[in-house]
Length: 413
Image (tube, rainbow, N blue to C red; front, top):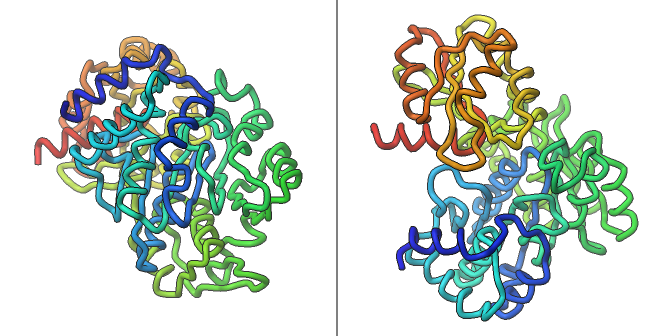
């Protein structure tokens, strides 16, 4: 079977798409001997900012000369993006080989799509003998498939409301689920400036050394700083990173706790050069395009703050679509002041919010709707056609919306 065949198979193999729990995937992981996929394992949870923290850790580990494996979820264009070794996505044949090994090891144990994906990443990393594995929790923490590993450092980024049906209806409940990645005595890097008490209580209960933003690490008037042993180490770098600052400084602290010592030039290059697809990604072309996977209210507020100065002097054409099970009304509310015209669209997925329903919602709150589009690529092309020189095109919402435009741009190129 090729990779597309495998992906179709694992999508339909298990009766439930999301079947949270560690017993089944943990047993298969033990059979495969992948619970410690690298000598250094970083486990990253949180609602927003996980991908940026993973990218920062991976960047600094590679700068230190380590062979790295990075697993993130979901992907934007190709499944291969979920399994990256030394900055390059794993090839189709390698992923198929991992799936074959998992299939042989699981016996009659049923696994979900996400569990297959997590085990495949661990299997590839162990097979490639990576020296540092950076693993992003996909949903929650306590019962996510990635939580079968033994981390050397745990990282929790900003916690906000998302996936409430699975994780709880408030930040305290969600925080308790995220804190499920903690281990006794294993350090926790916490980049949420106002963390739920449930996270702090769990860290104290387990005796997990706690490193908090603005205390143990962060950025102040003198530049970036982190804690190494009992010392505060400073970097004379003043500029703002392209990726969210809390995630970047958390990544800097995390690598230090794994006996990696970034230097001044490493931090300068990190801040100057590091970007990530779909995270306020700016592309030049017929119109400047900004792509961002803001798909919950907290992320939308962060995006709105970054768009505000741009929208003050330029018209913004927003290509927008979301999943129906997300709080799309709150997302629209956060972004409405900064959008001149909306181009409603929907991804080709069962969870997608119908484009006509989205357009009706936008119209009801006074948004100027240019149209609704069955294809993301058509919505983007319409935004280009209706915009004028100097205007901005913003593509945001669920991952398939941003991924669809990235794929469209790649095909046209």
